[in-house]
Amino acid sequence: MLVASLPTASRLALAYAPAKARLQTLALFALDTRLAGLLRNSSEPMLAQLRLSWWRETLTRDENEWPEGEPLLAALRSWNGQHRSLSALVDGWEALTGTAPLPPGALREMAEGRAASFAALARSLALEQEAEAASHLGRQWAAADLAMRLGHSQERSTATALVAEGKDRRPRVSRSLRPLLVLHGLAHRRLEKGDEAAALSPAAMLKAMRLGFLGF
Image 1 (cartoon, rainbow, N blue to C red):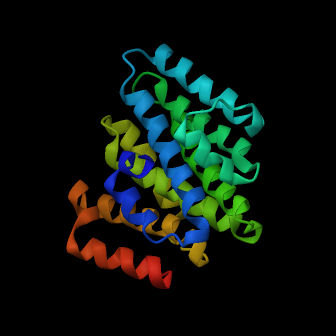
Image 2: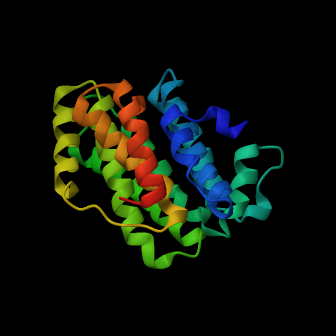
Image 3: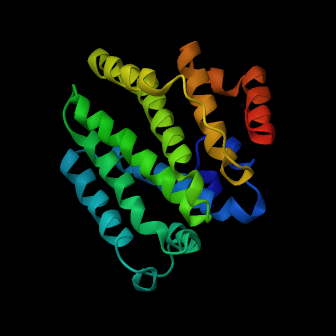
């Protein structure tokens, strides 16, 4: 159910997660997708903010206090208490509920929210030493994704500048975090080609395999 909710690129990236990291990675990707859907399907910014606030409050609580019957929360129980750090991801999505053109600070907050969530995944997998590298991948993934999807030219310019800040750095990560590397690589390919389909072309599939299996 959760896998089916993911965008195609996220499903592809998830395929490179080893069994020991699959559930935690799925939970992160599914949460990001759910939060994006709240914005996309809310007719008013205030409505989106109310829905996001529920997730923020829930993520700051102990998992034993969570309601039963929500598959995403069930998956997040695998995070070994690191789920609280994901409230930054909620903050990042909420920063996008303002009116266009969004200020640079809002786009940076979104990038930092995804960065924090990637670092939290590393910690949930007992890979504290790779948290900073994961954070960089999340920040760059977010910036490239925003640069491709935002409709306002000023917003796209800001996002493109965020991409440029760390574009030359390509950290290596261990196998458990390779899905993050795949997401990062596909987002940058899509931005470079200026085409959504570029992330799913045969050449992109080969790039995903190289990143997922070899890590570079």
